[in-house]
Each structure stands twice: as structure tokens, then as C-alpha cells.
Length: 114
Length: 496
Picture 1 (cartoon, one colour):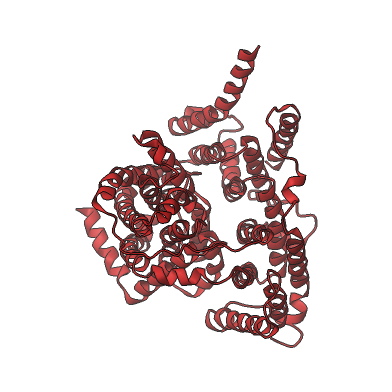
Picture 2 (tube, helix red, strand yellow):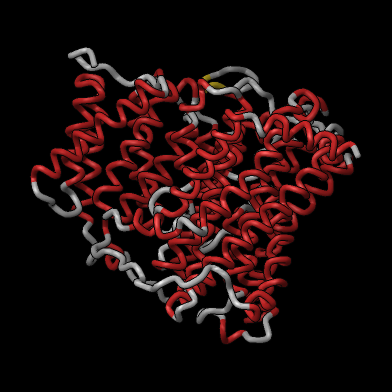
């Protein structure tokens, strides 16, 4: 079965390439997709998320999430520092309480035990 | 009548205080999720799935269902007021709804959307109620070939109905099928495509995939944009459209309900397609075509009714055949299995309390939503004022917790992020993620039914055509495949 779907995928891909080479429709170039958008923020966010996922088991949920949200709250537009810290703190603690304490969902424990 | 008796039994389940509470919570969350752009019913249901572990199956399904049809109500609020669809099925409502708002008819638009949704939702539940038993009996005749044929048809339909390039949609479908093969083979348990990674032995879970492709990708795309949406500063005088608008919308609501319900039943179509289809239909049969795009009331009433009717319709295949008809139903499928309920034709008999309790809760829920949506609109508008930079970290955290909670595995979180990046790229380059997820969910069933059919027919493909039910479905699927190719060939011939 994977052979079937994989080969289907391959054939379709080739069709797509052929279509785009011989097609007459005017499509904007790929570069236009990236102009004028703040893809830097996207890249930063992705990096932050990856770091978070890697460090999550070491640091435990509370610390890792706090750091992540601290960073994320500042990504789109930087608020005042205390607002940023307070929101990050509130988010981490609130979600911890809602998910771990109240709903009983297991969350990763870090080296500090929480 | 038998049905009424069962319904009364259902109400005795649905009106239990616990279930009432969860129904309310579901509707509330659903409306909230519908109002907020950037997270939709898929995200909310997948995130709250682990949270339902502790509840009884009935309560869990009641709440999740409330989220689902509640979001169809809430989505129209933002579409009308801010021209931002709260979730996918409400995109069409932006077109005319926002125009109505700009002309001071915001209240009427909101009222139409809410009432249309209520009427359609309720009628949809009635239809569900009456269709369930006969369909379940019909489904008992289904064997492996029939299931294969129906699933194949569903997948074909969803690629056929996708927006944008059909080739790309087919590719996404194929990719979804391939991804569903990762893990242990279902019949012989040989590991496939696991690359010696331990965590992949169980296959890719739907939750991280869905949350990454839809939730995280959506957020990443939104991050690119600069600027904040402005909220229309109109005073909403009353929520009732005037008589003329009512009269005009009657037909639209009726047509929307019918169309939505039937499209909801079909595997592959769903609330989103229903709303688009309804808009197209209304525009086509309207005597005042120029009004569409500038505030035609049918453009709001029709699609909103359609997407609500579609949610009731979507439950039909899942609860009678045991086949999910769209992504959200696939999540419900997972939820049922998690709670130890096996979806299939026997669900009505074995778990009558679940089915009838759910049906009664849908009636109750629709009423609750009508109340929640209209008088509380100013409240929802306030919610919208929360700037996105505060919202999106919250959404991300929810996604992360949801991915982790399924198997206590950080690998799942990594998977989610990987698919988030992939989904972001997909969106940018205009590849529809919907066929991928559907193919992914239906892949295992497709494959096992195919193999079972071939095993019992000893390798002969004829079995699909000699059995009447499966022959019908397969022929339709082949037709759908062939038509675009034929048209293309005809065009080439004509050019020469």
C-alpha cells in the first residue's frame, strides 16, 4: 500500500511539474510570497518552539513553558517588561493548574521535580 | 412511535445535571473558539480530548459535540463584525455579512445567522434522529468491499471538491495515505517506514499531526502579517432582521439546511464545503445577483444554515456506519475509541444511551447557543479586543499540552512542530491540508478493508464490482476521477 500511494505521489508530482512548465496561466513568482511579510518572526518562533521541545524534559513543564511564553509574548510587539513577565507567569501557572491539577493531565517533570 | 420513545429516553440522559453542564461548557467553548480567529473546532477538540479521559463517554461526546456545532454559531460573529472568519466554515459569511454590517445592518446579519443556524441545526438533529435506525440496518449489510468503496469515494470526493489545483489536492491525499502507513502494518505487524525510531512504531498520531498542520501552521501564517484588524464600531440596535429580510431569507435557510445536511453526510464534504456550496447556490438562483458581495441577506442566511445542518449530517456516517466523514468526525472517532465505545452499526443497540443522549443534548445545545449568541454578542466583541500577541502564545501552549498529553511523549510535541512548519509551507504554497488529514485518518481503514476483501476473494478485484453496493460506490469514484481527465483531453482535441 505505501508503494501504491508513494508512487501515486511521485506521478502526481511529475504531472505538477509538467503542468507548471507548459501552463499558460500567469502566476506571481515565488519570491513575491516572501516579500513584505515578517517571516523573520516566523523563523524566530519556530526556533523557540524547537528549543522548547528539546529542553522540555530537562527543565520540566513550568520552567520551560514560562521561558517560552516569556519569549513569545514579546514576539509580535514588545509590551512593557513587567506586563511580559506577568503574562508569561500567569499563563504558565494557570495552564499548569488547569491541566495538571484540575484535569489530571500528565505534564513533564524536569530535574527540579515539577 | 419508536423514535419518540427513544428520544424521551435520550432526554432523560441529556437532562442529567452533569450532562447539562458539559453541554453548556461545550457550547461555550465552541462559541469562544468560533469567535476567536486562529483556533477552530479542530484545535479545541483535539486539545480537550485528553481532558475528557476522566469523564463518562456520554458526557465527553456531549461536550465535544457542543464545541463542534457551537463553533458554527460563533464563527459568524467575527465574520460579520470584523471581516475575519472565526473559522473555516464562516469564510463565506464574511462576504455579505460584513457588507451588511457596514450598512448598519449588523444586528440583522447577526440575527439571521443565529436564527438560521438554530433552525438548521434543529432540523438537522431531527433528520439525524429519523435516519439513524434505517441507516444502521443498511450498514449491517456492509462487508469489507463496501467499506473500501465508500472510503475510496469519500477520499475522491474531498479531492474533487478542494479549492485550488486538483493535482495538488490529489498529492496531499496521496501524502496522507503514505503517512498513515508509518508504523506497524495492521494485518501482519511488520514495521513500515519507522526509520528505527522507537516512537514511530505506533505510527504518527492524529492529534500532533492535526494540531501542527492546522493550529501551529495557522499561527505561523498569522505571525507574518503586520497590522491589527479594526473592529466595526457600529451600534447594534436590534437583533431582528426586518420583515422583508426575513421573507427573503426563508428560502435561503431552507435550501441551506437541505444542502448542508446532505453534504454533511457525504464523506469528504463537511461544514466548510456546505457553506461554500450554499453561497454558490444562492447566488446562482437569485434574481438579484448583483447584490451578492454587497450585502445580500441570502448570502448570510444560506451558508450559516448550511454549516450548522452539516454538523448534524456529519454525525450520521459516524454513528451508523462507523466511518468518520470529516476531520472532526475523525477526532470523534478517536474519542469514542478512547472511551471504549466501538463505533459501528451496533452503536445504536449497544450504546443507546450515548446516541439518544447525544441527540437530546444537540436539541438542548442549539437552544443554549441561540441564547449565548445573541444577547452576549457585546461580550464576544470584548473578547475580540484581546490583542493577538496575547492570544497566540496561549494557543500554542494549548497545542503543546494537547500533543504531549496523548502519550506523555515529547516526541509528539516535536512531531507537532515539524508538521507545523510543514503546514506553514503548505499554506504558503497553496497546498490544501484537508485532503491530507482525511486520507491520513481513513488510510488504515482503506488499506485493511482492501486487503481483507482481496484475501477473501483470493486476489480477485472483481469482488468490488460483483457486489451491488460496492459496485455503485466504486463506479461513482471512478467517474469522478475520470471526468477531469476526459475534459482535459477533450479540450486538447478541440484546440487541434
